[in-house]
Length: 278
Image 1: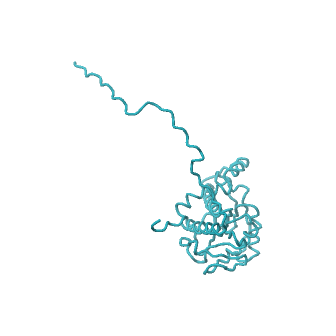
Image 2: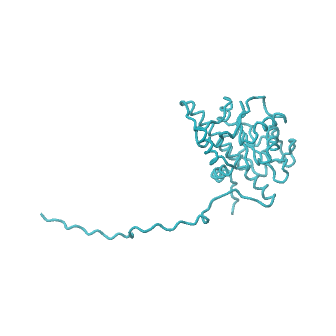
Image 3: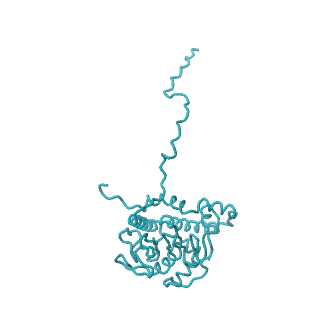
């Protein structure tokens, strides 16, 4: 029997193992951080652009419910005034040019549409009580309203929920549609130093040191409400221990983390489309 001679393996076109290339210096790696503006006019334009984008994102996420819902941003020049979406204009269509500038008395000082009186009654009082707050978000979402109907806080069931641990409150009463100053003050008092509220039988409200942060806290809180309701329907949820919940809040509960977390949504749905030819 004739044996076939063994083939000599072809030499590999690739060299043998080589040491890994040197790491890229950290200072050369891109990492987005919140912009800062020395010019108040540039800061105003930035806030308006981010506010309009947040409203469009809320529309994409299904947060619109008729004419209910509003997000506001404090004006950097007239600090007792804030920008808000026009009453009745679909959130998906809002641009920076559509926004209204409203004073603390609910009067439109710039713009051509009426303002939602609930935006004035609640948001103005929150802005007055919290000079550190740039933006306030409140819409009537499904899971936020379901949690509010139970009169419950967000429980520490997940690491995302820990961002709100001992940093939000419950307004444990319902007194009708918030359209007057006393009701707005009551809500502002309940918010205190926290980042969020559950308004019983009403919904959720969040605040932030930037539009992006307030919007992200609202989106995250709505998702946490959904997880909480789903987990409870499926069985008995296990809470994260207080010590671990607090430690997680210190890691995930800052406005900077919220801003960073929000950027993929901003670039996907919030940023205005580039003009033709740019």
